[in-house]
Image 1 (cartoon, rainbow, N blue to C red):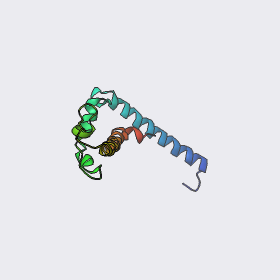
Image 2 (image 1 turned 90 degrees about the vertical axis):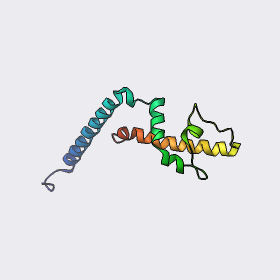
Image 3 (image 1 turned 180 degrees about the vertical axis):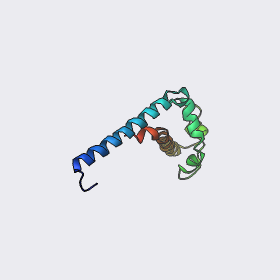
Image 4 (image 1 turned 120 degrees about the vertical axis):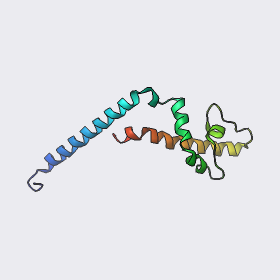
Length: 112
């Protein structure tokens, strides 16, 4: 069967199949996102961060981070840190936030 199929027809069939899968995945993701509990808001950001304790324990080279104490935009208290430590902690918090943002977007990324 494969020997008698023209290359262009094969590639068109594969492309069409992948397009259907991508559109289906996008549709499922959009339906999932339409639920208020899945929108990108502070509540969901805090919930994602809370589930990433191991990530925050390992994201900084010198110490384990506590999301609420060091990374939360409204609740953090870094007054006991030096300027250099604050910069390092900020960089580590941003890296951790990037990881859980990608986890949040993973269903959408697979459609691209």
